[in-house]
Length: 164
Image (cartoon, rainbow, N blue to C red; front, side, top):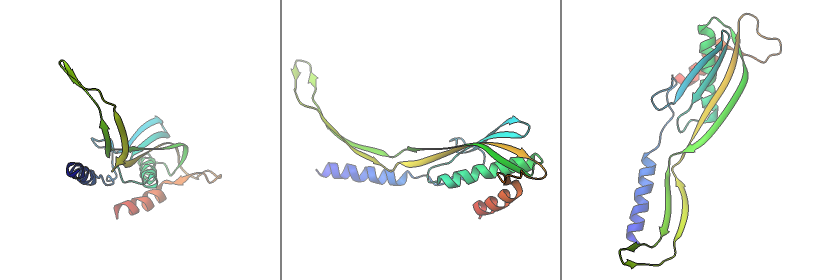
């Protein structure tokens, strides 16, 4: 029983060390965390922001909005409208803990037994969120329906929040 307790302690220790904090804002890194954009038309972009473990879906969405604002301003636009949005989440990582018993045969000798297995759950898994949005950009007076984001306002507000 001591070996089982030692093994479980080691598993918990390793899973505790394997945490990943929020990634810094920026383009996708070698692990795929960060933003990517695709220009669909001259005034329309698809933006994908993949958050690292530990980032809330709201923070990942803020990062995607910031990227939309940066693209709008860089291309001479004043505002943007989100025309499509998807937020997806998944849990990855962690250490699976299980127990099982079985039997086997070797040469002329064999053993008969009943296999029993169990799943004790996953320890240390992290939630990862991805935001995909399609944005339409415009210049001058914003739409009268109010369904738009002010590019400068978003860049200033969210930019200041994540940098400090």
